[in-house]
Image: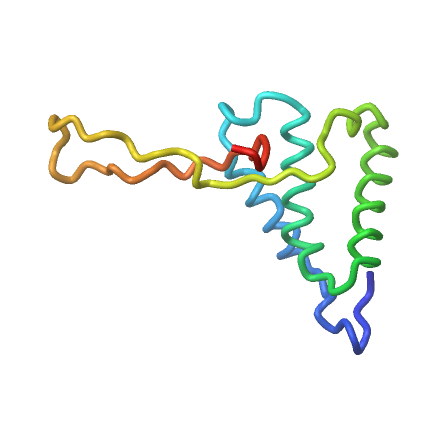
Length: 123
């Protein structure tokens, strides 16, 4: 997708690619246990870095179709069959650990920032 005068912010660089990988590398091995989660994470990061800049639905649909077409051509259609259409990953699900009183004064009792998928919005 090339920039135009109306869409001058459609400029993508290698920095965007590094942001995608940076997002993927924030997931721990305890969260990413299957290829479905990895594919959903890749789609989520590509969408957050690239498709969030798009200003109309036609461009977003083009991006989604191109992402699915490329993934199915390179890795086969069965890779995308069990991945949800929209997947979201967040860092705010886990609670901070409870203080037991045995911790040192400088103990970190903040909630862990573990990047994990949202199973559904009906929680």
